[in-house]
Image (cartoon, rainbow, N blue to C red; front, side, top):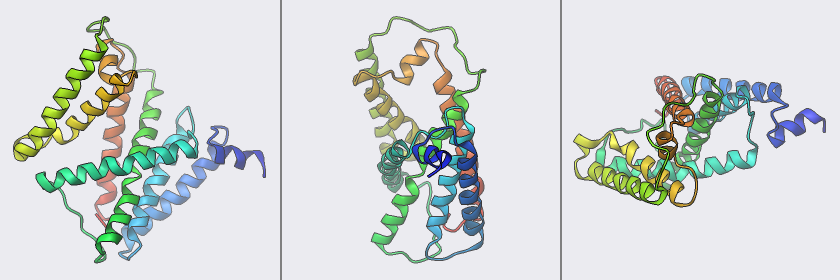
Length: 233
């Protein structure tokens, strides 16, 4: 096997041309099929489109593809993360799916899980791309002396309260659907000895936070655009 295919399979950024070609072929084909067909296998087109989008974002970023092992790990994490939001939606009732086929419960769970596996990798790929921007620099710190444990504990408490408010008063606190879990996960990072985003913000380091916010906007725009004529949607 030649060096370029080996580099592509290993996630090495020395093979961006092959990765871009794969991303465009997969994403473009699935995009066309998602908008033109309403068949049993349509959910696979959604998945293929977003896998292609993530690969393209990785390929155009300075770090290249992180490797299929990491990509697979992010996909595995993505499934329960989005199922949590589906569970929350049983209370807030803010979105529903229009399906092209009367799937059974098991079929639906399988197809949905495969589709949900694309969310976190796409956000990771987009945030890596934006983190390369030189405009995302440092700002004046709020404080440079942080009590990490107390900070994380307080952040987790606020996240739990926010999540509780969503279930208690969903019409009023619906925006916190997305805030509560973020605060809880970010706090867990701090409690486990990592560097939480809140700690970075307080120290004036906003690059990762801004990159993730921009990644969310980009993926959200693409999500809504591709959903418009999609089946399922």
